[in-house]
Length: 468
Image 1 (cartoon, rainbow, N blue to C red):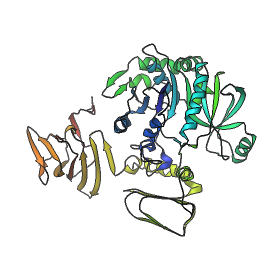
Image 2 (image 1 turned 45 degrees about the horizontal axis):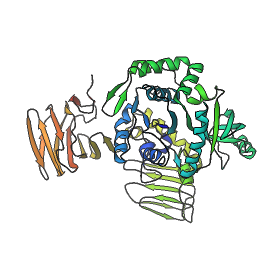
Image 3 (image 1 turned 120 degrees about the vertical axis):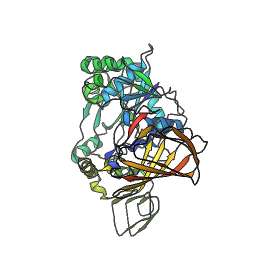
Image 4 (image 1 turned 90 degrees about the vertical axis):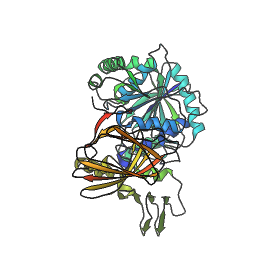
């Protein structure tokens, strides 16, 4: 059994924690590990091979770093040049998995789900594997505990040895319809998790969407390794139809089966669902970070940077980060997506980035800024190096706080250690490397007429970020 982990998506309803450059699957929302890491570690105890990961290009180093942190071996990190939904993504994984002539059973998982009852999850996997070996395309139907209007539903059909035939896939219903579904006992939430032989998925995709399969085949024929990653041709894949696995295959095939899953599952699709699945105090509150609540009930409060106090409120969501505060009523938490759309339309940085931004070499935190200056706290991991670059509009001062730095300015390289500083003039070609065994911490003071991140001309870069 080879897991395929879909690690795309933006999780916009969990803003301001989840953002385009650091979406929810890379955050620690339900445990001390990220949701991506939990997705793999909960497979411990199953006969799972090294998983294939699928993500977009912008998140590739996040995936690689989080796998490194947990010493997780992978079977390939496939990079989608453009987002084309789940059906093509899974097709790329299935084609990649069969290149050497093997035909593994694929367990398709989202990277951002919560599953608390791991033994029940493992038992459902075993049942699904029996059906997958029989040529079924299996989905996992969540046993509903309430009439939820935010999920699609699956109607169970004829009984099979280890599950049910799928009688029908149903779109997200109105509340009264959802109540009827739950009361009937024949409907399950659509989890978005699947299991099937790689060849069977490709056969059904060829039957119902041959154009999609043809594009994916031509794209996978171009796959090339790049560090930890596998790239396919952008222009070829960009012509692929955009469709989910549900619409492209599962709703059309006559081989669909379902295994019920009752394992305290959640897709953690909103702050309200995170409140629902978290442990609460005597007043029904969930508190994370430095918080003080007074006369407050049934609320979720998450403080990242400073003390947050909530007084005299009920059924609210309060989330604080280094650069934003979001307050919402629990019943209207879905409207957070509208705020995110406005941030995107106004080209505000809070749509995409946190104040702290992660890079393959480390991270930087923009701690202060003005009309002609910006101050950043920069961390460079041991042995890592920033690109060789220059700026047209800004000069920089680097002050080393801890560790040591090899600094190259034009044709001169020098070692800069704690409490020492160096100046990089406008137009100077420069590079920074941490030659030591501990993280390099430094303060960068930028000054100039334009301080945008796009004022970087890269000449060489070990992470492949030089424009061709």
